[in-house]
Length: 357
Image 1: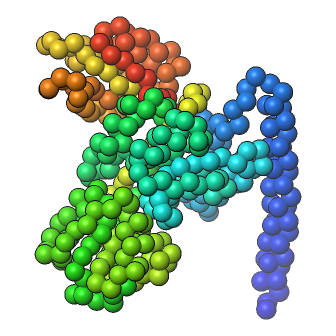
Image 2 (image 1 turned 60 degrees about the vertical axis):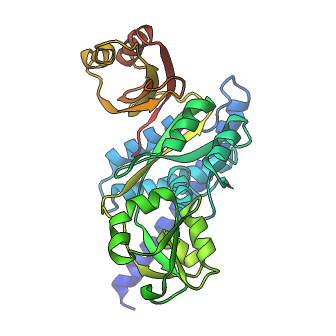
């Protein structure tokens, strides 16, 4: 070993010692925060807006060579570990292990949390509403296939709040116990996944029966015990269930992103980098929706999404879900939403929360 290499490694060892000491100091400060909050009126230990502020600040300070994504991944785990010294958060998502929902959960909360895998979206909303768990992570829309209608319906009916969001780039793999794609007679996956891979399946497995399951990881688990079948799931599922990757990245669109929302019961304060979601019903007369949207444009508030949803009360009667930039406590947003509320038959604030970063 050269002298230069020895010197560099010695410097790395010294830095690691300093980093370890700093991490434990951060952990001790986290414990002090818990004690301070125990004696105050503010009992909320998990603060999504505070985490976003930390990550955005570090992003500004970062001079490289570590990328923005590296810094976010490292600090997500540091924050998660330190928070676990204050409280062990319980989070529910669609399972089993290594589902895309589970991967999204890890990306948002880090790994130092208790995970509860649910079989259905209804179970997640029920558990959050009844405070069996602290939070839930559910898919709400896909960049190619649009909204997950079941999740939207539960969001409207369950009276939970949106506390955060996380975007996950989805790369589907064809997994099997077989070594050859010609041996496949059945394919298992989530309904949305079949839609996202429809063109590829029509071209490469045109006459194969498609079987819908509750999640892609559930499909991988099932296929691990079958000889003539394949599952569409994440690469990590291949390791967990000892499956062969027959094909990589089979989704029809390379830029395939799913947006997950984090649901809970708490009101999230402003981070300065926020989004607000509302649900409205406008009077059934000409120009009603346009008048409501004008309140946003007059205040220079950007609307990032609008979607019509059947009310299921009267035929051809719709509610509208809107995502807008800003927090409900921002003066211009608050003023605009008050005007919108006064001109709607129905108004619901679904949540104000930090944008996915």
